[in-house]
Amino acid sequence: MSVEEILAKLVSFPVLGGQSNTSIITWIKEYVESFGIPTVLVPHAIEEKASLHCRIGPAVNEGVILSGHTDVVPVAGQDWSTNPWELTDKGDGKLYGRGSCDMKGFIACVLAVLPEMIKADLQRPIYFAFSYDEEIGCLAAPELIEAITDHYDEKPKFAIIGEPSLMQPMIGQKGIVIYETVVNGSAGHSSRIRQEVSAIHESARLILWLESKMNGLVEAGHVDERFTPPHTSIHCGIVQGGIAPNVIADKAVFNWDVRVIPKDIAKNILTDFEQHCRQRENELRAVFPAFKIETREIHPDVPALDTAETDEIVGFVQELGQNPTWSTVSYAAEAGQFAAGGYQAIICGPGSIEQAHRADEFIAKSELERGVKMIRQLVQKLST
Ligand SMILES: [Zn+2]
Image 1 (tube, helix red, strand yellow):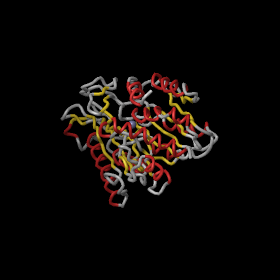
Image 2 (spheres, rainbow, N blue to C red):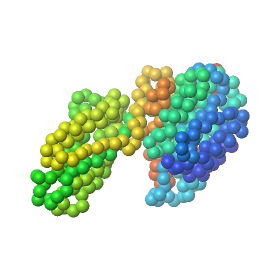
Image 3 (tube, rainbow, N blue to C red):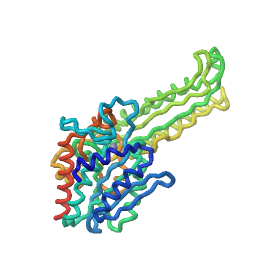
Image 4 (cartoon, rainbow, N blue to C red):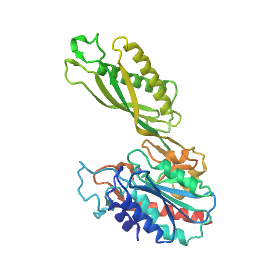
């Protein structure tokens, strides 16, 4: 099958993050196994979904993992001019469809070169690592990475995460975690604002505390100029609470996210915030004894990627893609998780992140070709 035929097949599976990916992963499994390569599924503990890994080539150290996710983001509410689940060639050099760019394009490149991988005299192996539920928080990668580490006696060295990067090696990625904070105050007539504890007023103070926490980190020199912006961001994007202008709110909820540069740790920011919350509880319980602030994680902590410019994988991938530059991304991806698992990791794949998650998502045919070329280069490099 050609890379375009494979991509059309992959796009036809409308598997969203959070849903069962049995359809697409079964197709990939059967495709790979039709070339005589055994695969291993890493199933979800309860739900009907699985990641897949396999090895092509000898069981020796220093192989290369090619990583991709099989899920995509929803199309609901987006103004598509084509059927998002049917790869469409409009004749403008682009192939349209949900996931064409993020990131079934890369998986298609990898699968299209599989027949050549088998024929080649690989001296070091290539591994496929295809996950699910990436789009809802990189949920499956930790188990998949652990399964790969446990399953193979030999130790792979590099992991290339084929997120759309226009084939530019991306050596850094911010980490992310999302929290929900619930503030329980006391209700009452609005005239009694100094006698009650308004959950809304206290939420406002806490949100500003978070903002000054962010500013304090920047002032203390917590910056990493490789990123845009070059600092950890803390942002509150949802506030809910209250029933009327003249009623003191007894409950308010706000959601906030932390996007960390590699040198900052989201958990430490949470610890400082929790300490501040305990202090506020102590102060305000004098007014309302049941006053309470509770925070929980609603999106797991996805670690940042911090590959050094001098790490071997950087030169390796620069050579593969024939692109001597590097950059960083501000989106979350599985690369930081592979790095945490002990593999030198980098993001490099066809297509532009600008097209991801939008209506009329597309991948340029020229990008698909570059993706295939990179995988072919990899096969060649590992065969000598
Ligand atoms: Zn992606």
